[in-house]
Amino acid sequence: MTRDAMRHVYGWLLLTPAAILLVAFTHYPTVATVLDSLYSKGSAIRPSRFVGLGQYAQLADDPIFWKVLANNAWFALGTIPASVALAIAMALLVNRALPGRALVRMAYFTPTILPMIAVANIWLFFYTPDIGLIDQVLSVFGLPGHNWLGDTATVLPAIIAMTIWKEAGFFMIFYLAALQNIPPELGEAARLEGASRWTYFRRVLFPLLMPTTLFVLINAVLNSFKLVDHLFVLTKGGPDNASNLLLYYIFESAFSYFDTNYAATLTVVLLALLAVLALAQFFALDRRIHYW
Image (cartoon, rainbow, N blue to C red; front, side, top):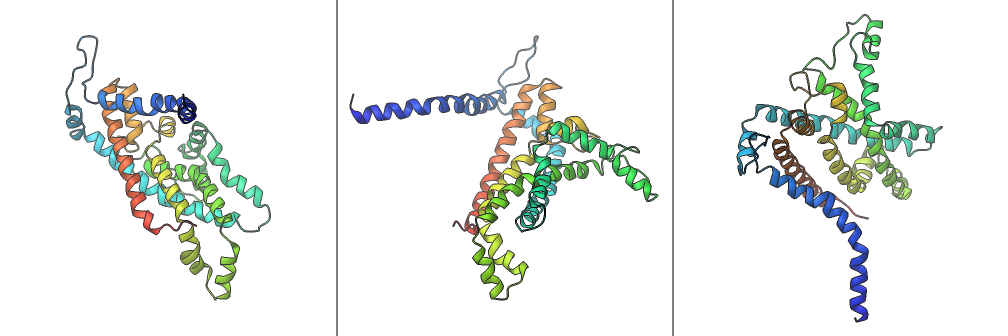
């Protein structure tokens, strides 16, 4: 065997462990999920049979699916812009020389490292009617309490507020790293030219942060469609599916209703939706990104 052939074999041997894991835990489950979505729900009496796109037709006629999809759209619109804006503001603050800067950074990042179940239980204490922290504060000012998680009008905003608190610190880390790589001479030049802080941020700083913003936005979109743990602890999708999101509906279909084929159909829709959103973000923002 020639030396070039040996190098090719050696390279493929190095790639094989990673390729096996990639195929076993990414490609195979994706293909299996697509195939499962083409079959009906099976039972001991009536085995599963091929129905083609029948599951997708059932999905189109499912009112809960459309409600869950609308909930997820509002959830994404509520969490993504607020989380990104708050992350930028926190990064700008802790990037400056201020007393106790390390402590402030740690305080901002702490919610990110907390387990999701722990976060849900903390906020459950906030939202509990009458004895919860929010209602206790309202009672000090003579205001009535409210069942925040039991009201269809407030349950989704309550989940959105908790998610923003959990994710903003995580996104802050990426913006802080990007800010520390921007030459300080740019700020000094802007001040010499008489530019205000807002002008410097809008015209110089934010365009230079666009690569980080693209990365953060894609992650934020993915995160907005994968919330399960918090809903399981706080609301279980209620009341009246007002807080039910797409991934939780998949979990519910598979493990509560034992309809794994319908859950596979929902999963295919979720994967397709995430792929379209990620590609749309990439192509929409790519021209505005300045790589440096």
